[in-house]
Length: 393
Image (cartoon, rainbow, N blue to C red):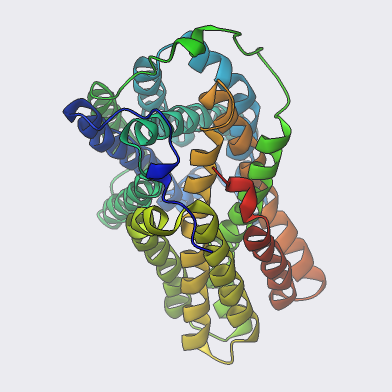
């Protein structure tokens, strides 16, 4: 059954005005900045590993820290959003996250790098919460789905940031110099864009302030579990696609790298057009279809007889997981009197999936095979479609 368009479900949403339209594009710019920091960092990981002297195993330990830092910071972010207006909160957190880009280039030991990446991850988590809360507010003010597009701009930022870092690395630019310039530029761009954001003028926000730390409510847990299964699938596609094609399908290193590109491009393109689908069919049917697409992609990957089919499977997995997290954040923003707190709760649960996914997949693969690991991925993304009702308006 076709669901209601989101515009018909947001009661008392004000008509779009020029200020809100400007806020929409400003929010997209903030998402792009956040993604650019992520892409810049990811593309320079080989330099960071070489600078600190890490092998793959110790680098894996270090890369757990950003996720842990984000998870530690997010439960307290709802309190910040209650105490401060969203516009300055987004400006400060996105600037801090951008400026923090230089931090991972400074340590020369594993333990210092781990400590720095904890702070780096906490800054990322706070900025993530603030910009998604702003995105949910803009969506509410517009009365139509726009969250998927915001996350599409985040994906574009990842591609842009990684491209700049790849070019700088090819030119022999020191990562410390690059990150100082890029981080400063992105901090200024993010703070400037935040000037056009909107604040939540809902008087209910001033009543019953949330505690500094609180467990998420049942609706938030259900939405978060949908997000967790989705992020698990996302991380499988990002972290293991190249290795899968290399080990299971015999691809060369250059061809295997195309799997990451196929996944990322498919995800970015789907997010940019996803809002139109949501407006037409509603969030629940869209997530159900996304779950079916992601499951199909995972099964294609598992049973792929060759490289072309394997690449198609990862593209389908990217399409299927693309819009679910934006819709989960949008659904969280409509739960309770404190949208930022609800979004933080969903983010904490969902990103937990990203934290454990690499280890779970690697552990299963070490005792069996990557094909077996992707059976777990298939089972989890199937849950996305089955539990889509948790995102009901």
